[in-house]
Image (cartoon, rainbow, N blue to C red):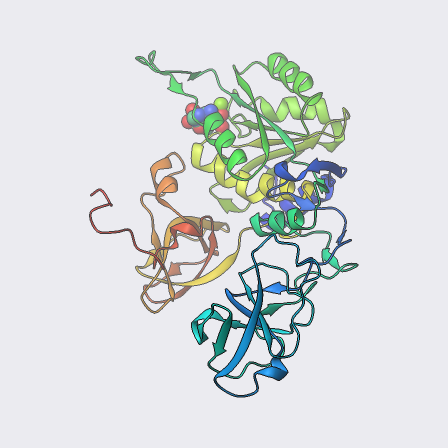
Amino acid sequence: MRAPVGVAEARGHVLSSCRRLAAVEVPLERALGLVLATAVRSHDDLPPFANSAMDGYALRAQDVRSANVKLRVVGSLMAGDDPGTMSVGPGEAVRIMTGAMLPDGADAVCMVEHTHGGEGSVVVERAVAVGTNVRRAGEDVAAGDRAFGPGEVLSAPHIGVLTSLGVTSVLVYPRPTVGVVSTGDELVNGPGPLPVGKIRDSNRAGLLAQLRADGFSAVDLGAVADDPDRLAETLREAASRCDVLLTSGGVSVGDRDIVRVVLEKLGGSRARWFQVAVKPGKPFAFCTLAQGGVAVFGLPGNPVSALVSYELFARPALRQMSGHRRLGRPQLSATADVEMRRVRDGRLHLVRAVVSAGDDGMLRARPSGPQGSHQMRALAAANALALLPDGDGVAAGDAVKVWLLDVDGLGAEAVDAAPGVVNA
Ligand code: AMP
Ligand code: MG
């Protein structure tokens, strides 16, 4: 039996075997969530011209150093108007709407709420300082500025800024294409009565869904029986169109555990089989194929173990390939709501947990349900994995580290659903 290795060591091996993908130019509308490969420099000012931040009157601040100054209204400007030769001279004002270009001569805007009159003349009720309610050209991004740097993850506001700057495509790291195959003689698909002894293949659907949720391109490679030749053929064929392959099942020490054998055949000396000192997710196989350096992750078969092992090894590797700098989930500290006991077995235990923020904003954690590695419902109910290092576990009130899987599920909502909208 192989000596167990820690999560960090097994992950380190995986990460050192997976290269970042080559950057590609992608149209901006398909770039959400991708990582910038180069800095984006701005050729233009944003805002492109000085404009009004308010509906009101463009004026010369030196004319309104005191309250209740009457100015002559010499024109009006809407957003989108070209002011042309319009200018604001001494004792004059121009009626101006939000977003309209500031006319020559004006250096401030008084909001309409602080004026009265307005036909032909306007009374400005309070003094106005230079620059008031003026958005200066380039005060968000100046021409020549580095708008964004390499490594930044493109969010909706990034897409907005880039669109404002007239950028239509960006150099980013692409989404890895990940093929998913299940193994097992016991697996069937679809509805209808199950043949005796068979179960539905749930790992494939779960892994495909998780990959898509994480922003990767997922390819369904189907399920294969415990037949080494068929599995090898499936992996070889898929390697020509995928960057990464995930298998589930067949990496333990059972009679039909063929994945390990197949990976050793395909990957030769690059194949590794780990007994990771973690629960769930102990058995794990990994290799890179000679064919294009495609990485193959042999995830365990038990459904909870398959997804947790994906979290521990595949997801960080895929994020690294996608150019991300933060590879893991955020690790936070919570207070255990109830005791979480465990036996000493030399492994890190990952407890499927519900983490919630109390009224005080502090995080609390409790198990989300039964912890068997076949009990998927508790993983579905969880928004975190609580880390119990080898030992006796924690008592209620003790601090416990958690990996947050879902931020929206944290609770302590800033916005509550309207009464009557939430179904019981
Ligand atoms: P194995 O490591 O192949 O022996 O699988 C361990 C356990 O996970 C067994 O109970 C399998 O039936 C189950 N299992 C394996 N693959 C899947 C799958 N694709 N969907 C659901 N359960 C599975
Ligand atoms: Mg199996």
